[in-house]
Image (tube, rainbow, N blue to C red; front, side, top):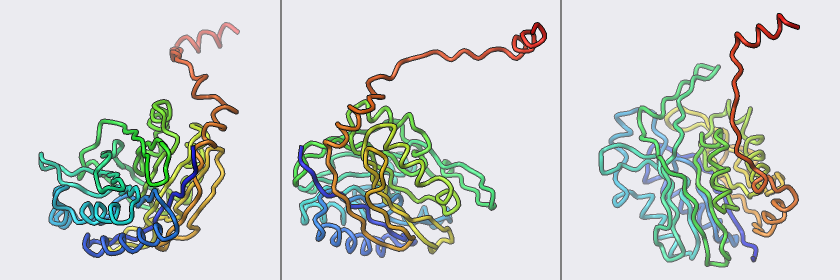
Length: 293
């Protein structure tokens, strides 16, 4: 198994998909120019729009989406695997999907993943988000092989942003053979400062896998503020590349699938995992035992 270069591109997507497509192309070309053959963009590459009416007017079906067409063209021209971390896609049923897409070196769509876990939270600083009010959650985890363009059969597992807080998704993908896990994101500044690094490192360690996490960063046109700090983490939990800021950037790291094999041999927790039952002792029984003692 040979090594290859992976890139995470950090963006500050605004409200215009057309302008964001221009920024995406510039950063993808920069990454490819540095030798990256797997390139990942952040969550909501196409646009970040809080206003529901403006959002509905901006997003379209996959076959008409400018991020999709731009990415397909770039992947084929540059001969790379281009992973759009996610963009908003209008489904046939009229609902929106927070959708990740992977394009191969021939421009073909290799995989599609719809974000499963919706970011419905109320934060301490007054921020409140209800992603489920705008998007329909996905129902299927996705693992796909990427082979070609100098990549010798790595297996990529998909996730998007808030999925990061659900380790069972990553464990299922690792058990299905993924040795490269993806977490493109638009983490809020508050949650990013608290949890971004530790959760990404944990997912890498737990699964003996590389983690590539391209992020949105900075103050966006719609008023939200995202954390940035795009990361690439190795299977031992070491940060091997980071954009230590919130401005647009490209980070690159060498990916060696043999390191995933080695980590899983040292600590074979995937192999050693066992099914178990959970026995919840009734409160009444606990009280009786306490009285008897």
